[in-house]
Image (cartoon, rainbow, N blue to C red; front, side):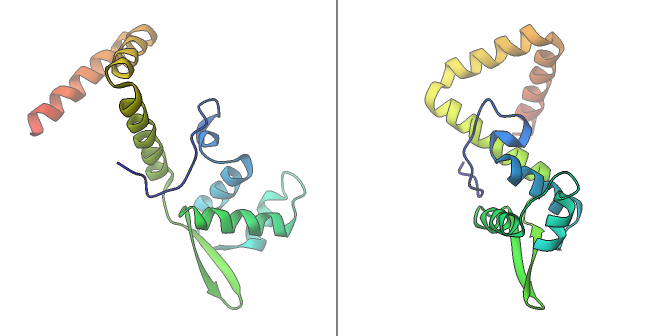
Length: 140
């Protein structure tokens, strides 16, 4: 299942930094918190933490729009940006992409390692997985 969003998975990143750069994550957080923003709106919000150039914010917003994570429209001579995807939808797309890649490249080994990891970290998670599998089977 190919994702509608463009990203590269970095397994050692933290949170959304696994698929987006640090500034991209910061910008997405602003747009998720305040949909329909201008470049200046985002710059002002980010400047609360550190100085940042207007052009840097503009470039980052445009890049996120190209990656299909934001939509943009022109209003009164300036671009306005809105989220094209929720945090949850992006997390789901990342999970799908990673799972697809693991299954395609490692199949049974990847599944066995996942089960080993779940059992080792918290046996209740393995029980939860078994419950979810049974629910899916009943839906067929």
